[in-house]
Image (cartoon, rainbow, N blue to C red):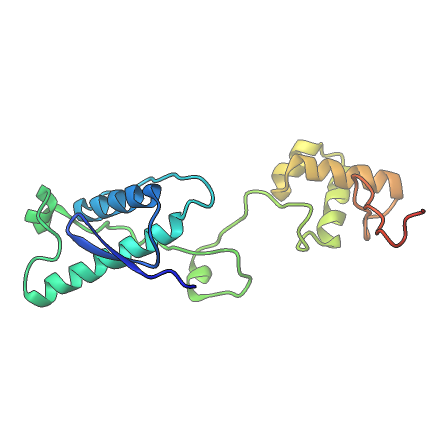
Length: 193
């Protein structure tokens, strides 16, 4: 049986919630609506599984609907709670264009063409750490550079540099180096009985 939706009014904002909210969700929605009304930043913490995302979405959507309704009525959408709302010249846009970019995708975009983002550290577990990178580490090591200098020159963590060189010394190659650590567990059907 599906739970029926509930409507809460918090800070003068009607919030549609898909079920009865937990007290922590009500407190979070109250803080979110207050922050939105005053134009403040909010830092809200709550344990895992307490419904933070649902409370955030429902309260933000409810507040947005309330602002749209105020606009359609011809009123001021955000109540004048502080000086910056009363004086529009007090809020100025920054002179610098700030680019927002997500570097988790490999496809280039127009923004990524203008801003070069260099990762702080390369992780040994990523597939991008190719044989050429490992060869370059070994090449610099053979040229007499120390671990720290190689790490700084290639922008790779010191532990990764040490791991590559240790495996190169042990196996004599950088191609398909075996991973360290504990061997994988045997599957139940391959275990001895």
